[in-house]
Length: 420
Figure 1 (cartoon, helix red, strand yellow):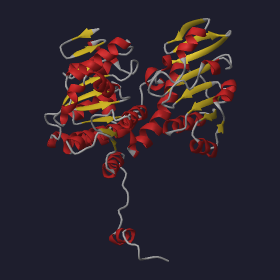
Figure 2 (cartoon, rainbow, N blue to C red; figure 1 turned 180 degrees about the vertical axis):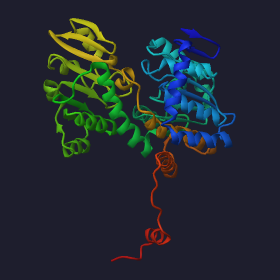
Figure 3 (cartoon, one colour; figure 1 turned 135 degrees about the horizontal axis):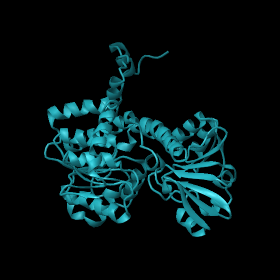
């Protein structure tokens, strides 16, 4: 482990490769680079300390550079023990960024690093999963009066924040970047769909065609995973607790059934619910020999792994991100220790995807500064206009143009008098 006054990373000698990977990421992050260019000129974040708990990836590195270009001071740690790209962490340390992260963090180091970011006394927090916000509220509430706002990246974090709001426990405004349309469409649907399948393939090298692929949860992420699995020839089965989503899955052409029934016929299982113990020991006990289980939700509690560990006759690691459990003389495989498979076994979302998501984060920080003191201590959304701006930046980056309404068309939409 390499340590310094402003960093703790696995191997600082990896910085050169991290720089190259960020250089490659930039080629596909044109929308965010446009925000960075404006930030360099306007410095909307001058004097603002921003503390991040995000996946430390090459794309996140470009967000960090964007915030710094806007005048911010930045400190960053990971938001999942298995999601850090060590070469990128080393590169950020080389650039002088305060960074504490490595892949395979112990739980002790994970929270020690979060507290390093908290010691930085951020004015804005950027979270993926709400651990940073939660830790501030539970153990460092004296810092809250100086915090302008926070920004949350993922559905799981929004669920936690809304629970805090409901309990009147949320003490500073949180911007739900996750709820941007550009985030739901690009990141959750296209990003999670592709990167989850990428992670499963890297971990197993298994053929999808002809397999029964069980998707637990049919939100934006589940829809993306189901579509990509179907595209590779899998027979997709969806399990749900929400009537409308289950109906939508059925109309999309997928089989819908209870997990207890799907467990008996599934070959590959992927949880994407944001809830806990979706696949339990009782389900694993009836699975086929050789069943493969993974998770693409934020936390590692969607599969009841502790119960599996206790009941299993044996456990061994058969590939880098693939553990074999012998349960009732049948082999059950858990990928990526039940953590986000797209980052535990692969590299997370493609750079184009994170470009739009991180435009949301950067513009949310700017919005927070502009509206300091005027936001309620609630989970709030960015204005529709900013979300539309992000989509426009991405279209521009892709070299695409769209039509503009004529004056007559605008007047028509604003009038009620013209009819049949």
